[in-house]
Image 1 (spheres, rainbow, N blue to C red):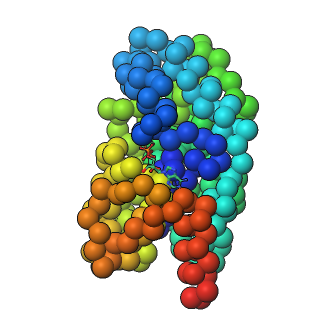
Image 2: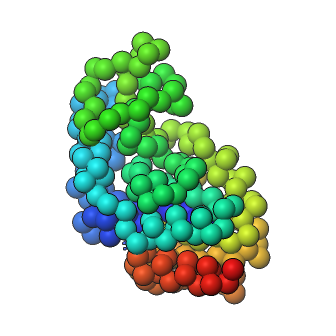
Length: 226
Ligand code: OAD
C-alpha cells in the first residue's frame, strides 16, 4: 500500500499545506475549506479550488508519481491511497487510486457527497447545478465532513504487506490514523525530507529524502527483489 500526501506533488510545483509558505499560511481554512465557508461565501471556495485546478492542470507528474505507477505495474496488488485532490498519480499511469479528500477533476452535488460529475478544464462556475437539481460544489472533503472512502482505505491498510507513506505531515484525521490499521510487523517506510512525528521502530523506517529521490530508490530496490 502506498499512502501519499501533498509532499509527493511538491516537486511538481504544487504547494503543500503546512509549514512555512504552505497554503494554510496564505488562506484561512475556515474561509475556504469548511461547510460553513461554503454556506457563507461559496464564491471564495469556488475561486480557491479554481486556482488549485488551474495549477494542477499546468503541473506534470514527477519521478515519484512515475515510480509509484511502476511499482503498481511490477506488483499489481499495489493499492494507492492519496489525500491529494490532484490527478498526478493517474497521469503517471497509476490505476484505481483512492482519493480520500476528493478530486479536482470532479464536482459534486451539494446534497450527496458521492454524486459527482466530471469537470473539464479548470473553471467551476458558481451556480451550475447537478442533474439532481442541487448546486454543484467542489468535490473536496471539507474540514469537519465525513471521509467517505476512509473505511475502504482501512480495509486496504489492514491487509498491507508493505506500507509506503510519502509526503504527508500526518496531521489530518482520520487519514493520519491509517497507520494504526496496518498490521504491526508490516515493513513501513516514511519518505519525507522533514522530521517525522512517528516513533520509528525496526519495522518503521524514515527515508529522509525528497519524494523524487526517496521513492525512486525504494521502488528500484523493490523491483530488483522480484
Ligand atoms: P502537509 O502540507 O500537511 O504535509 C506535507 C508533507 O510533505 C510535510 O511532511 C513535508 O515535510 C513533506 N514534503 C515537502 N516536500 C516534500 C518532498 N519534496 N518530498 C516528500 N515530502 C515532502 O500535507 P498533507 O499531509 O497532505 O486536506 O495534508 C493533509 C491534508 O491537509 C490535505 O489533504 C488537505 C490539507 O488540509 C484537505 O484540504 C481536506
